[in-house]
Amino acid sequence: MNSTLTTRMANLRRRMAETATDLVAIGPSSHMRWLADLSPHGDERPVMLLVSQTYAGFLMPALNVDSSRQHTDLPFFPWADAEGPSAALEQLIEATGISRANPSVVLDETMRADFALLLLDALPGAKRRFTQDTVGYLRSRKDEAEYKAIKAAHLLNDRAVTAAFAALKPGMTEVEVAEFIGEFYKANGATTEFCSVCFGPNGAFPHHHTGSTQLKAGDAVLIDTGCRLDGYPSDMTRMGYFQSAPEGYGQIHSIIDRAVEAAIAAAKPGVVASDVDKAARDVITAAGYGPNFLHRTGHGLGIDVHEAPYITGTSETVLDEGMVFSIEPGIYLQGKFGLRLEEIVIIRNGKAEIFSEMPRTAVAAG
Image (cartoon, rainbow, N blue to C red):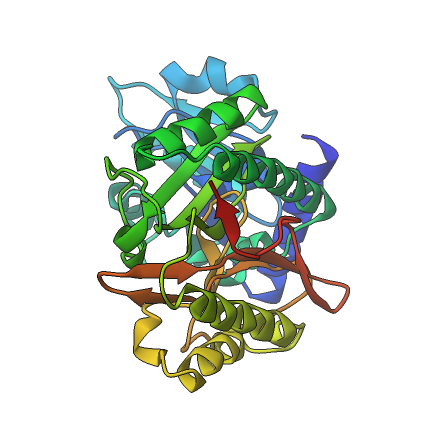
């Protein structure tokens, strides 16, 4: 196990002690990739990593053991299709050394329900909860290696989006722009995580599916895209228009930019996430567009594009150093255009630091 994974395992055990947790059970998920750098084949065959204060090992289908061994030196408890997983799971639980009397068990919330129930059936009386105060808590506080990886992904994203706006031509479809961005990522060693391109009125749909709409003069252009580079994603939304701006565009862009700035200024260690949402929302509401801001202000980003913390009007999460999340207020005017500006920030040295270096000013394309 490399030094990063050794540190993460030690930090998990510290959190387990602080939260009186006897056992953490992780399925084949981003939690497993973060903790053990392993992403085993996922199907209906039970696979899980069990961690106690003194032991960590995998329940693993026998046919996946040899492949998985290339990525971890943690012990395996293999089982074959002919015999089923129950005996191997019993052996693994015994190896963890936990007490069978009402143990406190943390379950990976993304694990298949049948995997989780297999474990709980083997531990009758277990008190169970999900990972928010153990693995989730730790994942939401990024280390220096994660900071560098997320930064690199965003700098590549800046270049891709800048190139895409420069490539806009009359009659291009949204799909063609998305394909251009995807090829840019590929040429620079990354893959497309997602890409939403919206021309004109399509931007008023916050989750528009990139389609065959053709670009024409006077269209607002929204590009919300992210790549994955060396295991970590980027996520950014930038706005522009083609040849001329639609009526009222400049005013709405200014309101959204001020909302972004207000939320960034509010995002500090010790601040409740709902106060960051409120800071952005208050700017938009004061401008008379409160009902047109249709979604939360942000979501966390790490191995997953969407993970904790969530920046919502009801979130009680207290922001802390190392937390990474989006700030992406928007105003959506049906039949006209939608305008959203998105930054991914990290709480670093007592304030919110933006990963992207691409300005949020409207791009005048064409």
